[in-house]
Image 1 (cartoon, one colour):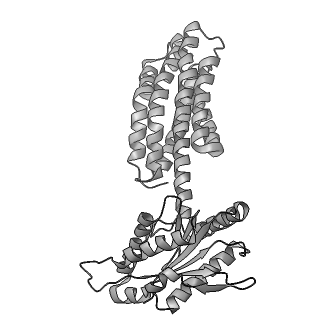
Image 2 (image 1 turned 30 degrees about the vertical axis):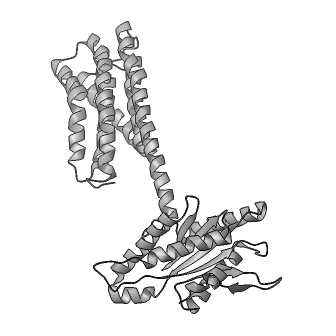
Amino acid sequence: MNTRSGKGLSFAKRIYLPRVFGMGIGLLCVMAGTAPLSPPPWVWAFMLFNGLVWPHLAYQWAARSEAPYQAEQRNLVLDSLMGGFWAAAMHFNPLPTVTVLSMMTMNNVSAGGKRLVLRGALAQLGGMAVAVLLLGPGLQLEATTLQVYASLPMLTLYPMALGWVCYQLAIKLAEHKRRLGALSLTDSLTGLLNHGAWKDLLMLNFQKCRKHRSDAVIALIDIDHFKAINDTFGHVIGDCVLRQLSAELRRTLREGDQAGRYGGDEFCVILPDTSEAQACQAMERLRERVGSYRNPQLPTLRISLSIGLCPFGAHLDTSDTWLEQADRALYTAKGAGRDQVMVAHRLHAGTQGLHEMPDLMSLAR
């Protein structure tokens, strides 16, 4: 909040235009309230300074400060101080006094809450005391027609302007919240779903499949010998390999498929409304595309994938069981020589087993 390039400076910028507008129309209100009292010339000069010069000076003061947020809080207190001064200078004429002080209190509520409201109220009392000492006490309880009309812009236009600023801020906060929500669900390196978000989707898809008896397949993907890639080429290249695989997943999968980074060099995919054969074709296509990747600067770099698939079946009790079967298929693929796709199957009632699809036997190496 206190950095010159952070939220403190944006806070000062956000208040700048409302202050220029508010002080400008507030000047009309104060001039109408003080004119019948024939104040000395220095009061008129100070009035013009406060209404026309101070908003720009306050912004420059905050923007050039080492702590713009704190500087702008100080400026708001000074606004309240000057508001109290003008209330006493108008001899507390009810309509213009209430208009000026209530608008400044509104600023303090929106900008700093209860604490700033309290500081602003004390500043208003201080400003009143200064005006009484300099100009003498007085009380004017009747508002003229001119004062009524001069107060109308402040009572109508300024709340609209402040409301618009608050609305724009609410839109920005909602967008920031949406972005933060998206970041909390994605893996920072690959941009895919992170472990927790993908497992939540897995549970939802499991419940959907059980309820509607629909097809779905999950896949666990492991980069073969990834540790050796890191040891040989370095972790920077290892990260590039992870990003390359995530990019291939986006290119290969359909729009409704849900891919994530399960952890380390393991990736996970949910293929809804997909048969076993379709899933095998998709994963084989992914395996071939990744395997054909070549980097001219690293001619010895080779990437291969071991993939375990598990179609949804009524024998699966939970989403964790579903995931466990895909995991077993993955480790069977790795144990059988890697760089291949394996599918988990229920061999018979009460038991679980694994086998490689007959049309994928040629993939084993």
